[in-house]
Image (cartoon, rainbow, N blue to C red; front, side, top):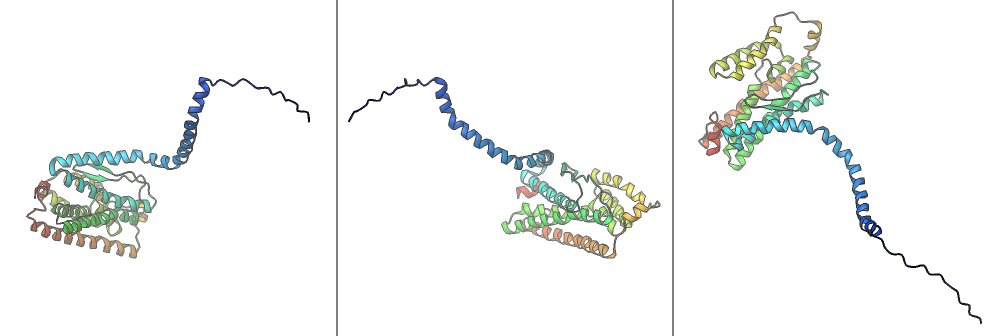
Length: 289
């Protein structure tokens, strides 16, 4: 057997350059970068909608923090936080009902010593819709006050009971049937003439407990009071058309809620008396007990 020797050509071994070493080192990092890029590409569908709400969060959150800071100077931070949260719950009731009707609304805005409000970017189309949006705040706000009352009883915490009393009172005050208050909007589905006793009640309250806010509400209520004594247009007549069943439902909710809030204030006041706390006193009284 003849063995033939095959000549093999060998190439000289390649020398590894600095650039090739860099590419090897960056290879795994590049892979990780691609994975991260794909992850964020999918995540953008979640982040972009959230970013749309950023201005709303800044506006509501910023004014909330301002109000908490202001009230902390008078009542201490615990009562201030609870009070502002109750306002938020109340305004959320308006917002939820307005959204249910498909109305465009702004984010809640908090103003120290004035309260809070949501701006309707689209007016209600009729009195029934206006009344429903109006009563949504006091209804949810009353539940918030009730929750505070329950927590106060469960944990023997007078600060929660005091918050409940203030919550009951604020929602009851808002049910005054006049002008820009919730009650003024609610009674559009009952009778606009209820604005007159509402105005009288507000005037008495302002005389008995002099307060700039009360008189400001009176002033802002005058245009609606004036509208009672002028001839209504056909469009206004259609706006205030309410069916008997709608009027009965809203009357039951409105006067029933007033009764519940009065009872809640009475119960909370009795509970506070056990702790020696004045329900109508300074918020600091609650905190130092």
